[in-house]
Image (cartoon, rainbow, N blue to C red):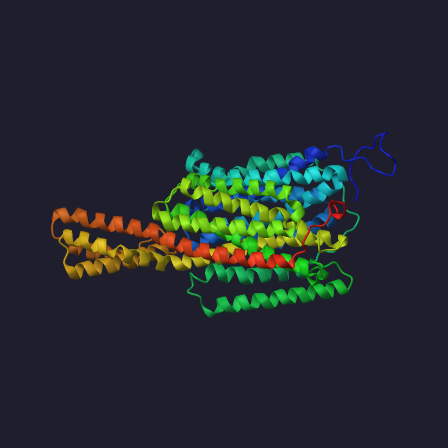
Length: 570
C-alpha cells in the first residue's frame, strides 16, 4: 500500500514518511461516521412524527429504519471493493456526495414511499463512503499511531449514541422554520458539504496496487436473499400473512445457499469473491457471524420498539423520548470503558456483557410491571443504564475476538463481512420485533379494555345508559381501540369507531349525559391504550431476553481471547 506524503530528510529510505495531513484526514473520516451514526438512529425518534405528517401504516415505521440498514448491509462489502478498484478518496467523495443528496431527498419527501426510497439512497451511498475511511486510516498512519486513530472511533460512537436521539427529538420539537422532522435530514447538508470540502483538501490520493474484480452476480444474489427475508417480515402482517410471504422467506434460504455455492465456485476459479468462502469453514468466524446476527437484531429491534412505546404508548414528545435513551447511551460508554480494563478476560467479557444486558432488560420489564402506564423517565433510568453497560461490554471485544479465528490475509474480507452482518442484523431485528410488536398490539389493547370494562359500565350506568346499550358500547370501544392501534392509515376513522359514535349518540337520554358518556369513553380508552401498549412491550422484553440468552450460548463458539495486538494487523 502506498501513501501520499512528502519525504523528510530524517526518514530512512526504506520507510516512507507518514502522510502529512493524516490527523486532519481522520477528522474528515470521523465526520462521515457521525453522519451515518446519526442517521441510523434518528428515525427511531422521529418516526411517529414522520408517519403523522406523511401517512402510512405501522410497516412504514419499520421500513424507515430497515430500508437504511438493509441497503447499507448489502452495499458495504461491494463499497470496500470499489475503493480498491477506483481509489478510496474518489469513492469517499462519491459516497459523501450521494449521502448528502439522499439526505436532501429525505427532507423533501412528500410520501412514505418517497421517504423510504430516499433512505435506500442514503444507505447505498453510505456503504460506498464508510469502508474507504477505515482503509485510508490503515494507509495513512504508522503502526504506533494507528491504535490512537482507531481509538477515537469509540468516543465518537458513544457521543453520537448519546447526542443522536436528543438532537433528533430537539429538532422535531423545535420545528425550525416549520420544517418539523425534516430538519433531522437538512442538518446533513452542511455536514456533508464540510465532509466533501475536507475530503478534497486532506484525503490522500493513494490507490491500492491490487485491483480485485467486482463480483456483481454475488452482490445481486446477497441483495436478493436479504430482501426476500426482510420484505415479508415487515409487510406480512398488514397483508394478513398470505402464502406468498412464507414462500419468499423459504426462497431467501435457497438464495443464501446459492450465494454460498457461487462464491465457492468463483474462489476456486481464481476470481475475487465478494466474501472469502474459507472464512465460514472456521467455527469461530461462522459462530461470530451467527452471534452478531442475533445480537444486532436484538439491539436494533429493541431500540425501535422501545421508542415507539415511549412516544405512541406513553405519549412522550420526541425530545423527551430522546432524553429517555440517554442512560442507555451513557451506559454503553461506561461499558466500553470497563471492557478496556478487563480485556484480558476475552470472551468472558462478552458473555458477562450479555448477562448484564439481560438483567437490564428484565429491569425494564419489572419497572413496567410495577409502575404501569404512568411510568416516567426517572423510573426507567436505572434499568436502561444497566442495559447500556451490558451492551458496551458485549460490543467492545466482539470484533477483535471474532477476527482472532481468521488468517491475516482474510482480515479485510472478514471485517467487511462482519460490518455487513451488523447492518443486516439491524434490519432483521427491526422487521422481526417490529412485526411482533404491532402484531400483538391490537389484541393487547382489546384485552386492556376488557380489564377496564367494569369501571366503564359503572360510569355508563350512572349516566343512565340502558344495560343492552352498555354492552354494545363496551364491545364497540373494544373493537375501535384495537382497530385504531393497528390502522394502516392513522388519520382514517375505522368503521368500528364510527359505529361506536353512532351507538353512543343513541344511548344519550339527557343533555347532562351527553358530556358524561364521551368523558367515560375517553378515560377508559386512554387507560386501556397505555396499559395495552405496556403489556405488549413486556412481552417483547421477554423475547429480547430470550435472544440475549441465545447470544450468550453462541459465544461459546468464539475463541477465548482476541488476537494479540502485535499480530492484529493494525
